[in-house]
Image (cartoon, rainbow, N blue to C red; front, side, top):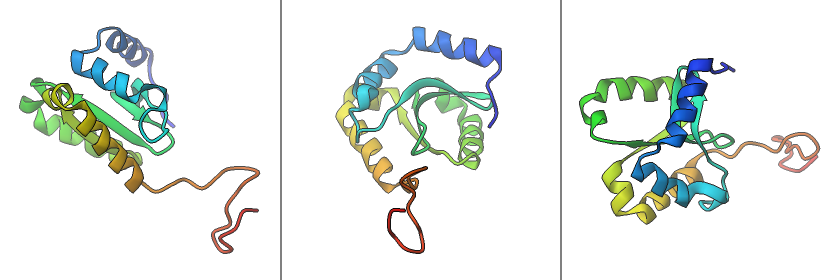
Length: 135
């Protein structure tokens, strides 16, 4: 696991405190396990990047993009590729989609979560792959 450096941690804190309208709107929808019962965190450092919303256990990242991302498409593709190489699935939504249809965005996130592989239970309730039963 790559630990964030102090600059990224400071930047993540700044981004949490100066969220866009779209980020605030989506956070209201995602917070408190409102989508599929999954916990999301906002402005999370993963390697060299600060990601808008992260569900750590299912390894889902949700990015909310403004107009500047339209011009920086190659950089966003490289960022998504790096994050996916770390085992994350990345979803991207435009600000206007979040602001105009946050319920539809939440449904897309829920569909993505349902499609992701479920991690096996850990210690004490491990699932035996060969037996298909709880140990």
